[in-house]
Amino acid sequence: MTRKLKAKGIIPKVTAMVLTTALLGQVVASSVYAGDTLPYTGESAKGVNQPYQHGYTSAQILNWTPESDIHGDLLRAHVPLQPRNEAFAATQAYPELSPDTQLFTMSGDYGNAFFDSTPYTNEFSQYLFNYWQYTDYYSYWHGMASAGVPEELYDPSKEWTEKYFEFGILNIPNPAYTNAAHKNGVKSIANIFSRTMTVGLKPINKC
Image (cartoon, rainbow, N blue to C red; front, side, top):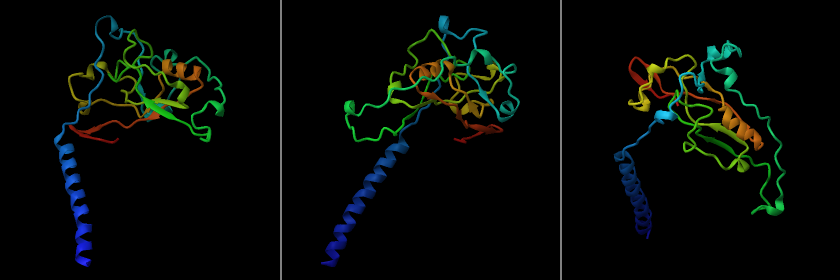
């Protein structure tokens, strides 16, 4: 009886191990792709003097002034944070859920081409966010070159692991999305971002 019980206990374990190994084999065998948003061309291309989002190093944060910030006056949101409607339990699918629950959304804005992340553009197909009513906090998800990095260092043909220029540790919110967030009573916050750093020519992932 004891041997039968042990055998019955072993079979599920072996089966689970086989399935796990098979699944892991598929994951390892599969290729993983990660790409950047390629810069727009033609009439949609970023203008020579068009302001774009940029990151900030720790030194730039310590020495920051409104006058020294690149495009600083054009990267500000102007819509004050509006009050939100109080939750009305009678209209909720699950009235017993606590209204104190909050949602923090991290998503893209107008692109991740590092020098083409602009507050405003004539391209509306990049990313549209239509669920402000469900969101309490908003922040975007991508890294940006620090202020003053020459654009010629960016090569769109290289993989995202081969961006050998300085990224800012702090990313301020996109002002266009912040205006939309504030209009709907959503707080727009900055993020601390750690991109792939390099030592010599070897990338070291710090995320």
